[in-house]
Image (cartoon, rainbow, N blue to C red; front, side):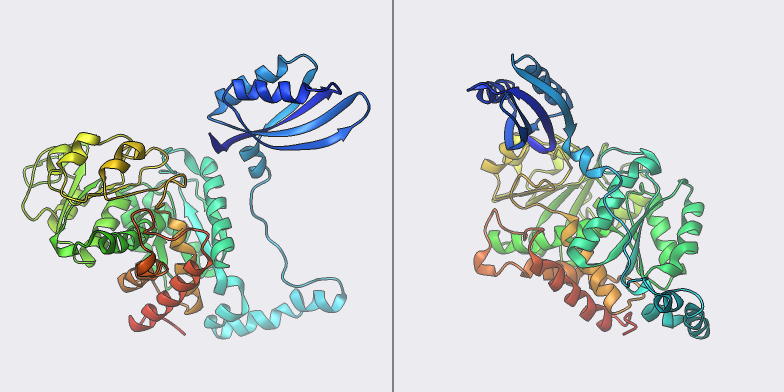
Length: 463
């Protein structure tokens, strides 16, 4: 059962003792999970109730509704997918910070008074940081080419994700973010579009742009702009993974330099995660794609994978994912579902750690892995140790905006990772608690402060 697939059914019931119980039994017989039951209205002959029901998927929901239709005395007046209802009309809005109810107020927020503010910014463009929304606004930009696990579904279908990202920016970091989905997947066109809209923003969050184009787009934009450009699928994932990694080492008592780490998936996220692990002192990382380990004997590697190989696999191990997993201390999955099994875990080193981060279906079923590993983490919310980017990006941009950072440095990312890890006191760490909850209010505050300090140390803070 999953609230993501929950429905609300409006039932019109005859006022007959036991009828509601019959209706609920019909739901239970179909495997539905009943939540809230609310009376809408009632009279001597009928009662109208809204019943919330968790289902497995859309087909399951339709079977539940059909079963309710079949109960004598029960009429299904309507039913709605609760997730779709939440998205109706979008999830965010623009609101005014000041009232406009008098002529005086109008003359100050708009013409003629606004002209004086425009002239001040024209004379000193840096004044835009104080006199416009730039100081607290981030553009969430996507071309729709790699949305969640759905792939290249285009800019219109990407909008709900970008809206959700903007909502999380506001809820967790107090940052005003706006979704911008571009009707192009041409690298040069994306770069030109983002560069052209940059003056109104204090930062750019690139999202769901496919590799390897995402590397070029981020690099070029960061060179062109004087505000942070951050591809969250790469670096947000890496920061949170690094936080979980640091705390996992404390729990299992191993050292980064002694580890063998196998990474399945060497796209945008896999590359960024590998780079931050190298920064943390891991010496032996083996990346794998569909063809197995990236090794010198491979003739099918593109430029990005050759660059990855140049930094990794010091012993030049070759073979399949299953072969190179032998003796590994960590498995990090950023690829797809069900890539490894129980037998693979048995071949890993003592006290193996598995971060199976493919979402919604991880690289190994957690129910299979948990009895066989020292620590298990996923990208899912229904298991302990959720590696979720929302632990990073709201606080990271909050800190970057507060100090008006020119860019996001490696030092800022490492500072964010350590801040997330340190939210959990060492005595409280355990195998099922190596990463704080996304709802812990201490996380964004700690990350923002750490990022500001690192930005000043790295010389990229304006203030």
